[in-house]
Amino acid sequence: MRWGMPGFHAVMIFGAVVFFWSLYVAIRTICKEKIFAMSICFLVLSAVLSMEETFGLKELLFWYTGAVNYTWVLAASLLTLALQLKIREEPNKRKQWMLAGVSIVTALIGSGGALMITAVQCACLLLVLALSYDEIREKKLIAVPFLAAFAGALWNACAPGNFARNDSTMSEYGYGVCEARDTLYCWKEHISKIINKPLFILILAAVFMVTAIWGRKMISKGVSHIKLFMVMAVMLATQYLAAFPAVLGYHGIMDRARTGSTFDMIIKMTLIFTVMTLAQWSAEHIGMINKILMAILVVSVVFGIICRSEIKESIKEGYTYNLMKELYNGTVRDVYKVREATLSQLDSAADGEDAIVYSNPIPSNKTMYGMGLQVDSEALVNRSAAGLFKLNSVTVIYEE
Image (tube, rainbow, N blue to C red):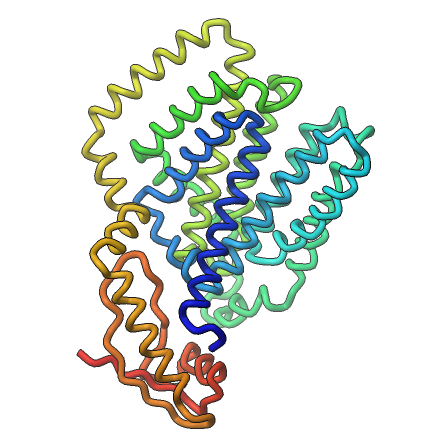
């Protein structure tokens, strides 16, 4: 395997860094003010990394297929959103064309992975277009990112591979399930789980206060009643559209860690943006906003004290806390050693050989992704490993 485990980890870490960087770039472009952007970025990361339902991140950050189809395309989508906003703000025509050209590339990448990310990208870019209705005649290039993303979405949706998993289970499930109803049920289940968490409620309260204080220029020309309604409607529609492809593909359920965790992330980010818009609208249209902010602060402190045990438990069950814990106690290192030893044996096997690998079991952990190799040499992952290392077959026997 080229570059071995160190190379694989370097690629995965680089991809994760690009994702977090693109998230900050998008937030910085939306927020405009640096201190405001950094505050919102901290709150967004707290929501998506530090709550108990975030364990799907191990598939999104440490599994190559999950990273390529979800994390990396989401990073491209965030950059496309930032580029569209930059086109809107840029007065120089030549720079607008340059930004539009780059946005075509990022938009096509953003539409080329999981369809739930494709749907989110198109919905958010369309929202920016709708909010820019009075500028679109002078700056027609604002529409380029959306058009590129939509074209990529159509191409992606028509790809035969999208129906491979669906067709493989069709004989068992059939088409009798009402996907629209199941999507609504799935959305209700996920959003109820999230908004009932005291930690997330406090994060939303902090987002409101921070935006009302520093974010009064977030949406240029202010937030009218129509714009507020538009944002709320599109954000809700975005959540639904994000769930629909996954529910359709998995026949009424969303039982994969990567899809569930990505959907939770989308819900959290769209709710945060909705609260940001509501805060700007409140600051512009409500005269006693300072008293409201003080009331929210007092209630948040009291609420946090009352729910401190639940908040503490939520953080301790989150992905970030457990990753730091397993880095500290050596679990991550032990997982790395087992994986490295297994790959070294496969790499040293002769071409065309029926390789039998004796390996220690992967140490019990909450944050690292397993290799998936099994005793059965006909298992999908085993056959893939055999093809990668030019072997006839691969059998992995885990010693107790």
